[in-house]
Length: 384
Ligand code: GLA
Image 1 (spheres, helix red, strand yellow):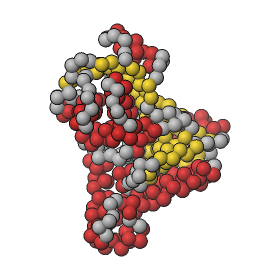
Image 2: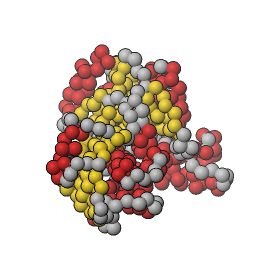
Image 3: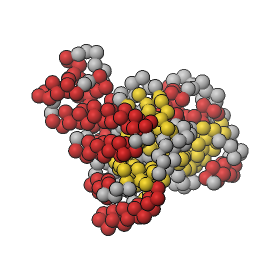
Image 4: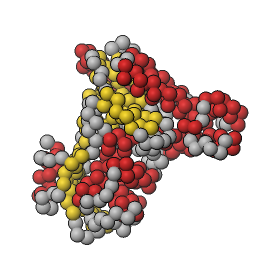
């Protein structure tokens, strides 16, 4: 439906589009803040997308319209990223990244819209960047692999101010139906892990506490903590490149020289990496109870050690796990708001989720939103 609308809108504003692209958001089963520490993550692309109708331009001008926000954005590739409003920043920075890497592009016209909630931890910005760059590749027949598109999209985020890893971009580009993606962020190797949940389903609960990670120093500050630990460890062993190369034993040896905050954050990352591998094994065996316990441990680590949760999110998790029909619940994404991911028994899902929603509203005055999500395919060209 949305796709049809944006294609029609494009035709009204410009002419017929050259290409239609859909780019998914992502969930993350487990593995939070492990990507930029070159560890493992277990995300999946979801069946929520940003859709693009795109056409070439002969000049270096870009002209985009979003019916979702009723915003028109125009820029030249030479413009300053900082002067652009909201989502225009990402498009301009991504176009400049393409050019910087030697890709021959001119401008583009586009209409885009989607159903990925913004600022909720479902990676709408990765979908925006990956979808746009993929669309540019199609328009200008660029020689670009999905890996290169992920790196360009990541560089775009860095340019805007978020020193993120590659999880979101990889999930959006490499996602596959009914599968999670086990990504080794060091080698960038991926494995598909079947997401077969039997009597259970995944539900996302949006706390509606919005976060803007790029503007919030909390995310980058966590990354800086991890880097301080690595710098210290390198004084003992110059071959260490990231927390991935540090064992628990070595971290213990460094304890006296680290501030408690950095030590705890690094410990969380080391344990979270183990949990990702354990969760992949549990999913392969169909052991959902074990998976649920890992989700709980992940949330506890994020709350107590990495300290990236907020009271509203902790409340949603506490409300969720007070029900035996929910096997696991944890905050998902960069933190400081956003969503929780929950493994909920199908038969009782509606009743329990309504109960959680009501209790959450009573206590916080906020309305939670609930989405059932399915793992879907990565960025692709679509037809009407
Ligand atoms: C954001 C970042 C990712 C990742 C997660 C936390 O989504 O964009 O790279 O670090 O936070 O796991």
